[in-house]
Length: 241
Image 1 (spheres, helix red, strand yellow):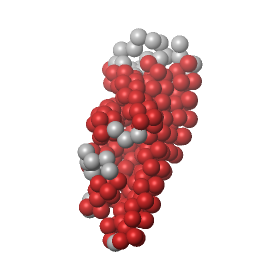
Image 2 (image 1 turned 135 degrees about the vertical axis):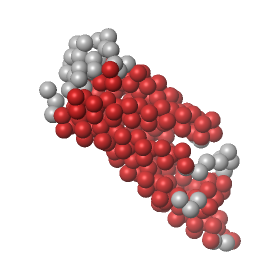
Image 3 (image 1 turned 90 degrees about the horizontal axis):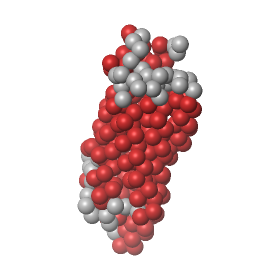
């Protein structure tokens, strides 16, 4: 039987990561996809750096929580899926964390430099910020694909085969993961899309946040009570089968 302390740690990481991820709803957005409009968002936002710091910390907990699922699910095919999901979470998390750092720190400094410059210096600052923004968006897009797409899909398939978890938890992971996979694909091949980036991404990220909070509750209940089914969920597939 798994060490109950592991369930508690995974539960805490899931809840903290999920709650901090709600900060994404506060991220400034604009229908204007131009680089100047994007820089203006960073310049005008008084919470830009602080918000990204919160998101950075939240992502650390998210990666820890998603990775921990590999150690708490049943054995057999479920654990195989979960361990591949753990790898995806670590790789995607590294990409996403780099993107958040670039967006919150580097892009903010570049935006301020652009806003305070004039003449030829302003033109140079704009080009530098544009190049940095392209790199950031590439990391962001691949991060969505791997961390929020591939990892939840694999963990969702693992949870489907673990009798202790209610059926809505893996289904939410599969829906959120599939949607994020689509968003990441659209951005990788088509670049910025207002619908995909500013509308669909927050929706699927919200679903995955609810999934994390649900996993946190389920894992804590397992650690505290030792009940066979977390959240009272009836399972159709025996654990370890």
